[in-house]
Amino acid sequence: MYFYLLIASLLFSPKLVAEPQATPVNVKVRVLLVDKDLNQKPVPFFIIHFRNTETAAAPAEFKTDLDGKAEAQLAPGRYSISTPKPVDLGGKRYSWNLDIQVGATEQHIDLTNDNAKIEDLPPAPSSSGENKSSSGAADGGLTALFDKLKNSVVAVHSESRTGSGFLVDSSGLVVTNNHVVNSSAYLAVQFDGQRKVPAKLIASNPDKDVAVIWFDPSAFREGVVAPLLMNEAASHLAVGQRVFTIGNPLGREKALTTGVLSKIDKDSLNSDININPGNSGGPLFTLDGQVAGITTSELRNLASIVPVQVVRPIVEQARKDIVGATPPAPVSLPVEPADFYPAYALRAVLLEDKFDTKPYFFEAGEFHVWFVTPPYNYFLRHEQEMAAARKAAKRSGGEAATAKPPSSALEDAKEYHPILVVRVRPKFGVLFKVRFKNGFVRMRLLCGGREVTPIEPARGEFDLVDQRGRTVDTTYQGGYEYSADAVTPACGNVTLEIYSEKDPTTPTSHAVDAATVQRIWQDFDAFRQEHPTPPPAARP
Image (cartoon, rainbow, N blue to C red):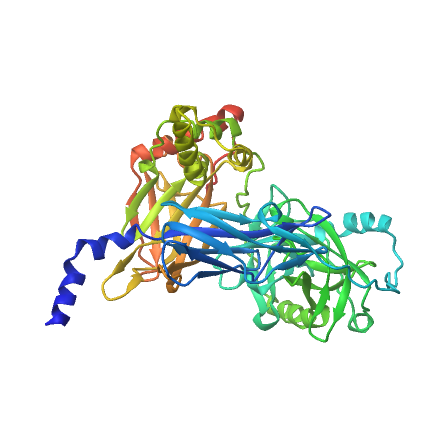
């Protein structure tokens, strides 16, 4: 009898079926430190505990990825953040112990120098006899080497991340990290702020985290092949030898970073060189301009590098595999705009009495969909702060309308690019277990029946976490970036097609409401006023 009553309650109780849809909140954490040279250093594989102070549940555990980022869902409430182990960097020890409020909307939390507890470490013993490399090159020579080799390095884009890569053959072969390109249906290489073309995977060794991709070299005629250090010379690398890398840190222009080799093993090298987000997969050069290895990650403040002896056989295999084959057509792909959305227009959003969020959200089959513009994104990030500021104004005897945005929110308004993000997340439900109903594979945005090419077609894992902090299910979500004029009233009809894990060939099609299209168009009006001739929409 009890069993049947339980079944009935699961099937017909509105609370059990409907409430979980709104309970979890997506929480994104980034751990990023800045060293004495102002280099930004993400902290990978770092454990953070979130303890709900309103319940007796065990703490939820977040673990950062190679970019120092972690993402999961938590129930709304008051949380205490703590870090079981500290981070040592530049003679300092960093740890965090904070209290935060998780509200009803997506939360972004940065653990940085500014909110860390910082302690001085005892000075390390001084080393002697530094080997300054057989070339004896001085720092002045680094400028010449950078100018000579910078066009050997490209940015590599996939569905899950952006990294670096380097040209190893005039046919267009590029070496990068396998974790950057693994299992991605979308691959592209970018040469500068204006040029990006498709690429495809040719060879890889997941165990060594090395992959070789291929693009049409006619798209980058000024490309320079990075010379690989011969095995004999590689065997003479020494601890203390100076090295440098060229990469695209944080997705920006190419930059040179220097360091020294600190450990040499048969299958790996270690260096104190900075591996910032976007540098992973780049070349590690000796001071005579030859590649000694490929940067792959940063662990315990030391860069991990795959030696050139491991890279060479994979490159040779790729050369054989492309004989008689054709590279992807050098079609120009859209790139992220260098301009920023006007900060004054975003700050004005926080002063509005009410911000209508309904036009940005809809449901399509087994998916939730958000059209995220810069104003909507900015509002979501600072909604809780403004609510607190309005309450404080009332407690002081003033009016809520007189509340001022916090200085951090005003500063943050300078950091938004004029892009539209279409975010797709599977729904989840409750019967016997809380589970996602489907998984995201890809999407197509159609303007007047024609597909709009995205700037970045991102696809990544998405965890469902219960109130005890346990991951109960994992699926994929999508977040495609588009140019500011991708969706306009001139499209006539705007349609979103979502391809799922259940049916990867037949999409769920949803006609976007005209009011949503109009709201998106209006949101970019401030940007159009400052840029009367925006770049053309990305069309096939």
